[in-house]
Length: 208
Image (cartoon, rainbow, N blue to C red; front, top):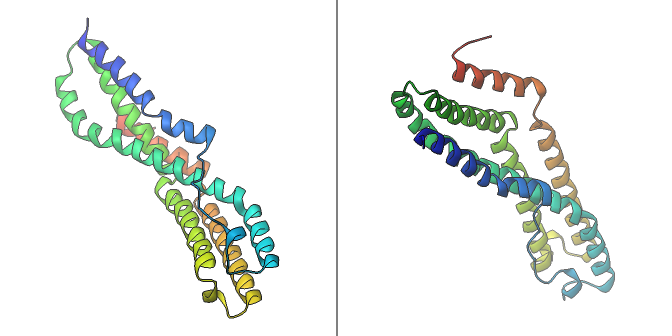
């Protein structure tokens, strides 16, 4: 059997298989970790304050789930891209030298370079680094506030009303910051087309 055909088959199967975790995160999402005891069991607040804090958390729970899903999708795609593009950048020059008159060898090189180029284009066009940082920092910063409110509410103010007001304000400001960052990191059609054209030129060597 043609070794180049075997290489094409193995590469195709492996590249699809390793993309499954990213696809799964996009479709199914990611379940948040159990954060332990919450405000309901805290000895630091009155019953009225516990109700307000629990209701506030229930309203932001969906947002936290979305932040976690986005962070995990971009994280997995980032490492998927690195896993394939770094070895390809080293191997492709040697593969080019190994091309034989057989058309199958050329197809394998085209497959590797096209796959790498597409990953580069999507990684750049969707601003994967910036988006992962935005969603991960938003999620992490919220839970820092959440744990601080649980463990050291006095850092938010002297009275219970001051503590609740300051905590709600900080969470609101955090949501606004993440919303603005999301808009700033939104990919545009023009950027995506430009990046795809750039990577296409690298493969074909032709500038349209």
